[in-house]
Image (cartoon, rainbow, N blue to C red):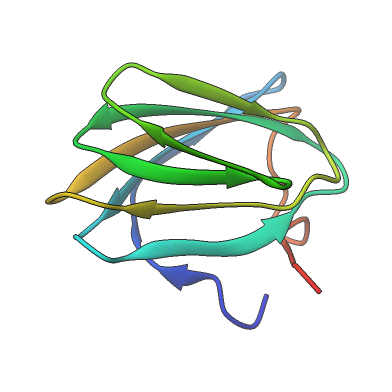
Length: 103
């Protein structure tokens, strides 16, 4: 992926059925619009406020709020207030070559 955005992966765990990442974004940092061909994802906000865009729908998510992203759907997320932490659950596990930039 050419521009994945500005964020840090604090933790990445993969098992046969899924992978889990903890993503940290400083205020105004983001995960650029992209999609996955092989996995669905679930984002759960752990700290602070984020803006998530899934397809044509944009929403603000607070801690413990969740959004599901089906495979093939363009999505992105960005921090709105302070340092945001987001858990990203991928089913099946996210493969290194399965993050495609939105066109």
